[in-house]
Length: 491
Picture (cartoon, rainbow, N blue to C red):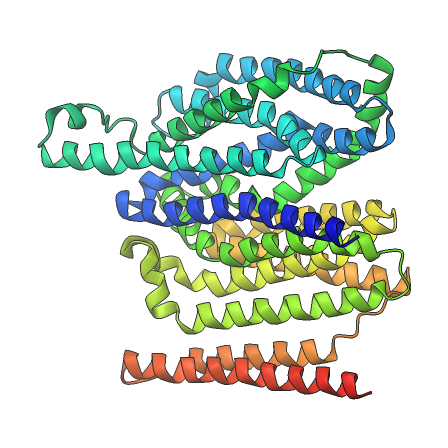
């Protein structure tokens, strides 16, 4: 039994590394891009198009990767399940990608950017290769080949960063300085930020080449009866995925179109950069989910599973509050990770941090719907959140710009979180004992607002006071939690 747990722990670590490491690297590089392209209008195309890519990734996969996992665990011939799903994805990917490329000129004109069609084509190729990679990578996880999975993901991000650095740092610098003729000629200013899309295509193509042997190792077979069952299973997942991605990306897709064009592209560039600062909470949440979800599913049938969920939710919120306070109380120097021209939007960062905490809590507590086979409730709540997102953005962006986007995100995620607590409490009689959590939350927000509205004569003095309060908050949590744990042990 110990060997099983050790293997499970090692796989959780490897999968966590494979997902978090690429996110951290690309996160850091996204901040570096604000220094490479100091004009927010220039970087807005990157923000907008990657939002499209995230959204279309859901449509290209239409829930088939999750359907594969579900049916592979139930079906005697999991290879047939895999090939049936993979053939489906290959066919639909070819169709969708062909349509995107064929209508690239029309789509380019709809974006209101003065771009050539190559940006659309590169984005289509990123989406297509993402879709073709999804199922083979999922199969590696199904077969417990964690090392191969991690290797593929890590090489992918290293290639992505290397191609970007070559074109946007080395070659661009030589071009701007008119020095090395060969390297300077490798950079085309008309492409500019488009090199991030070229890097994405290159990284995915290499990942596909690496995984090709495992793709062709299995004889292809297509079971139409099985396929219909998988499609029926996948449809609700597609709806849930689209609703979730609407919450996550809709504001950056629509922002530019609800404002005058120049103002819209400027605000989109600023908002996209400041949004990334708040993503530290999301990265932490992803790491937490990867580590904790297997444990929750394993203990879901046990008598004390609710006790585990209470504790995990409590400590998740505590760590988020610590991260929130550290970032907001030190925002005066942390903001310098993005270029000065983008810092005008730094005021939305606390709003987005709180929004992502609410989303993380929703993810954390809604896992109960999955473990109890009541996933439909999570789907409904996510759809409600997407309706709130769309409505608030359409109504308030023309008046308040990207500030409306931040508040719409917070209100949407807060609504989803509160609805989940309400449904669990009154429909399923699940009670979360979070009295200490609420006390810590009130204390952290009180510290945030006190420091926000007190004027200091010196920035250094302000930082000292802010961090003394921050460490005081951390120590308060430490001693209260230590006392609480000790009293339980004594009992």
